[in-house]
Structures are given as structure tokens and as C-alpha cells.
Image (tube, rainbow, N blue to C red; front, side, top):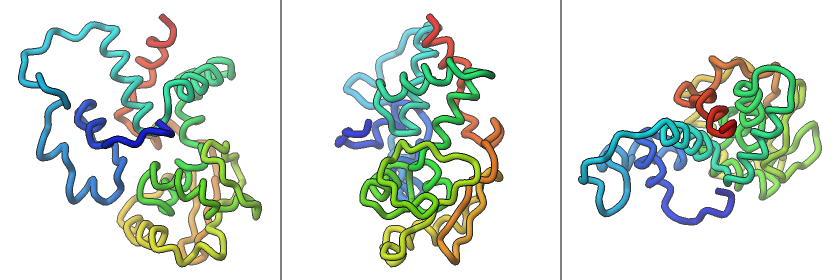
Length: 208
């Protein structure tokens, strides 16, 4: 959904959970809390029992929307994960978690993954001292992410850092909020990743 420009709250309503696509607004003005039903004209119509395919599809769509990706992007990540040694589901989640936009969000330098993607594309961050504006950049263990000198006074970044003080930091990241730098110290483990994602269902969906 790199080029998605419509309302994003409908995604939360469709999945029935908060996907935190709008940063702090998800805590203060969440549409899901006021309209907890799927979008569309016929939401009050009694729905049929969901098939196994439907359950797998919803699991895939939920994960794709959490990381704000287009279908082709998400499928490419799955193909990469399936060709890597180890468990395909965990490989997929690690590839998604170590995207630069997600790492920036996890470090608290952006209010949402959507916001992080825009900040990265606007060249506000550097990796190991080199400016990177590709949100899909794969961050590796030991690499340092830093807010560039000229971007430290950007209001969106300052606001996100203040809000992140109330958010727990994943153990696979180390952040210095005074210097506005952070480092990936290890690979994320399954317990460190969103527990609402059902990666086994995603693997089953693509393995049909």
C-alpha cells in the first residue's frame, strides 16, 4: 500500500483490530472504537461461516496492512523467506521487522510505520553515517540508525520521540534518545513481534 491514498481507518475496521496506522490518533480518536464493524453498506447482514481460505486470507491481509505493504511487495518477502534456511514464518516476520521504516518506528522516531516511510523517503535518517531514503532497506545487526543533523528539529520527529517515552522498546534495539541514534543489536525473536500476526496461516495461504 505504498501508493494507497484513501482512508486507512477502514483497514482497522475490516480486520477488527487496531493496526496503528495513524500514530497517536489511534489512541485518542480511534474510529474502530466508535464504529466497530467492517466497512461497507451491508455490515448488518448476517455473515456466513468463514472458510479456511477466508481465515488464511484475513491473516495475510492483516499482516500486510500492519506493515503497510502492497500485495506484490508482501509476496516477494514471503518468497525470500521461503528460500532462507529456518522456519519460513519467522523468517518472514524478521524480514518485515528489519525494514528501515519499521525500525525507525520501533525506535520511536516516527509516530507510525506510515509516517516513518515518509520521513525516510524525505532523507531524514542515516544508516552508519550514510543517508538512506529507501524505506525497504534491510537493517542488519550492528548497524546504527541516526536522525540526520538537519532533521533533529523536525516537529514530527520530536513529537514522536516524546510519545515513545511511554512505549516499551523492543529488546533487539538499543536507542539513545538524547543523541537521536539507535542500533540493531540482535535479530528480533518471535515474542518481540506483534502477537496478533498468525504467520502459520500466512504460510498456509501462500502454500495452497
